[in-house]
Length: 265
Image (cartoon, rainbow, N blue to C red; front, side):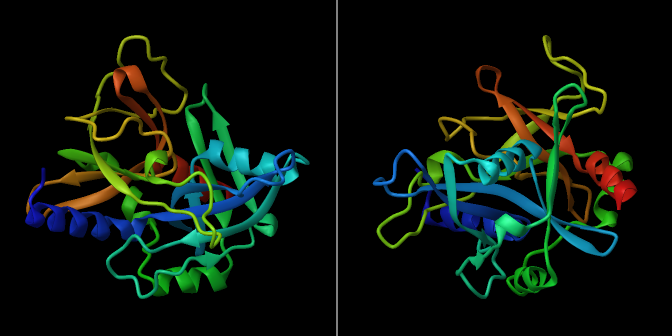
């Protein structure tokens, strides 16, 4: 069991990096279950700045799922919010109501290409509110020179499903909590893992896993650290999927997705 001091330091550490985490929380009802409490999902993501515009960046398969749900007659999206209260610099714990149905989005989820990312364009109104609560968007300086950095450690930040309620309570609210896990980057592909056209970040979860699964952490940022003084960090990849039996995680590198987005802008 952790001491109070250890718990406090862990909380402070998580909140420092929480300024890079946004949860897109969606409440919905399945049409064939009208009498059940609405379902709740929390999707992890971060903010990225491309050519002066700010986007919510997450895994492509997440936006693909939401895109299908928005068009489906079997699911009714009741509401969506942006939860931005994971960082230490927050001034409000209230989520931001978000117009998901009319939000422009783009996504790609292609296993052979090794690409799994998507973005939702944010209006200035949302950008101002997120910035006021301490959220920090990734900028070109974060990814432009990553190829020159020797990373000493990696951590994955996200929203595991076991820390997230699957339905809203009587007040119509869902519960969501973040966590961080240590990940060791693998320089060579493990046996049985097929190379993709665009190289992916491949890592293995280190140490004892306090979770039964990392399901739900897709879309969350992976941080790379260089311990040479002064210690620095970068957001190096976006969590995509994992192989549970081998504790392997796969992620889309930020330099890859950002360079593609810059070309499209």
